[in-house]
Image (cartoon, rainbow, N blue to C red; front, side, top):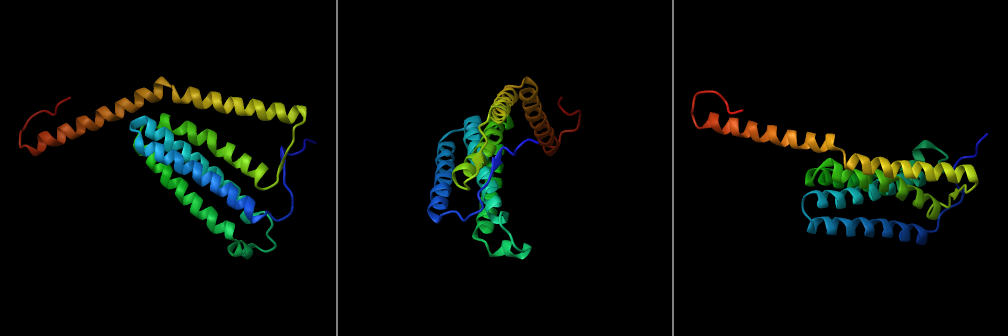
Length: 193
């Protein structure tokens, strides 16, 4: 039988650890949002996407804290981590919408795809006292999986298929706007192609 990649400790986490971890996550996301606010187009989408990934990873860590040691299902509503998880999730969704509106999906998605699990794993190890298995097979599988994620995100962000589909939708939007303008002007005839 294979041991789990991460194993957790069954104790309470010090408030200073939570404040430090959440401060680091929120500070990193805020710095990325600030950089994105100053950038334009796809660069803005990339910064917002990275901030989204951090927030989604933080949400996962808070979810583990909220439901990790429940004695009764209703006790989840008595834990501060439940409400922090909801806030982090809402913030992550808000950032994701801005990332997707700021530029192309291929610019925003790599940051989301890579920083979500990275943040969740680092939060688990450093904040939730989970222990990573560093034996040969575990380390090899984790390294291989991480390399595949990075490679896949890079290939996806450079995909000519996605680049082409982004241009095609922009063209059809301009055409439909042009057709609508022609119709509003009162001319009768064929629509422009």
